[in-house]
Image (cartoon, rainbow, N blue to C red):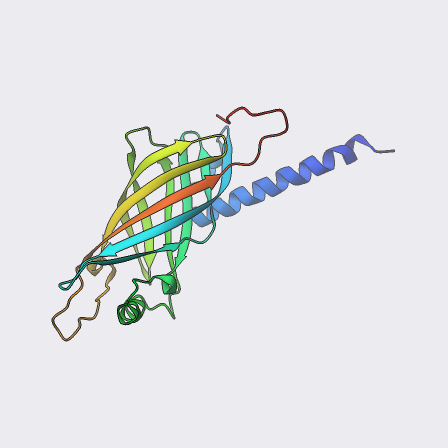
Length: 210
């Protein structure tokens, strides 16, 4: 005979897992725990991103792109939070010598990951919004202004683009010159296209989650 307690156990285990996932995400991103604990509704969505970077030099411009490591997008009470890493050694510009110099500057052997996070930013409207990105490169962590645009939500996913720039000097990075003539510009432009996937709705329920 199955008791009422036994019937409730799978649901309780599921809720415990969700709470554990939420608190792990809170710890990684830095969202104030009390703020999320008081939230009426929290969604945690698996997400992916493609990050593109572009720089200048006295010879010609250069750039490249690389994927972020898988992460979570957390939505709560009209705000969103996320934190993700990219592997610095995967940064490439289709020029082997330049890439080798870039990896040396970033110290990819000792600092393999570049980490970025945004905490409790307002969900933007059609005009987009500004947010603060905390970005760590090597041992330096800086707060950078980032523009969030093209936020779209469907029954299957959420998409948006983040655009920002950084100063190499601000991070204490000094790119090597070539023959003392070809020098890299201090400002690097970056953008990330983010896609977060929603879980499939239960059979017979196709309503968009508010």
